[in-house]
Image (cartoon, rainbow, N blue to C red; front, top):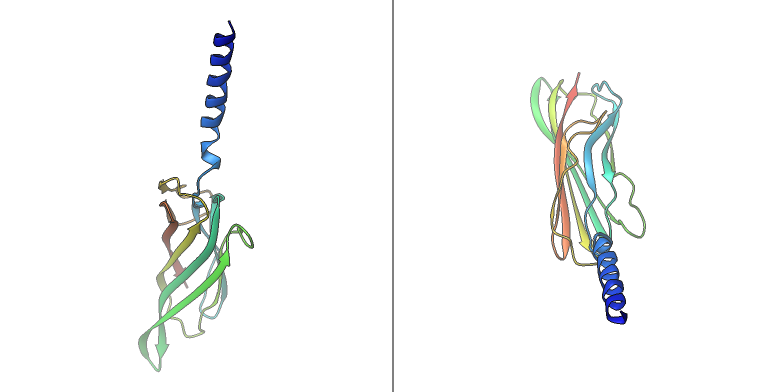
Length: 166
């Protein structure tokens, strides 16, 4: 009887430990796309673009966010490409796990059109990564997609959306 009780308790402990494995490894945030304001964008506008997290990441340290968008500007009657970009370094698990934002001011001579905004993120894992791909699809009120990937030592994400400038 003692052996049976011990065996049952052992199985219960193992089952409980197996259920908590998700909390032991690092994984990146799962994103549901981008939101931007104002809803209608014109040349010269200040625009806030946000990568919206559906689920926060776990056990992440040093973080690098990179944003970029190539636009066309009117340069004395000629269309000229101009690269807008930003980089941010933070500590996801210790300082800032909020939704990453990019605040840009479009030049007043931006030519109306559709431009692709690109986003990338890299995290150092503070525990072994769980491995896998995380994609929340496109959430309500969001546009574009962001796919996150988990590896043993680091995690990363990348995504894009198309911004219409009127």
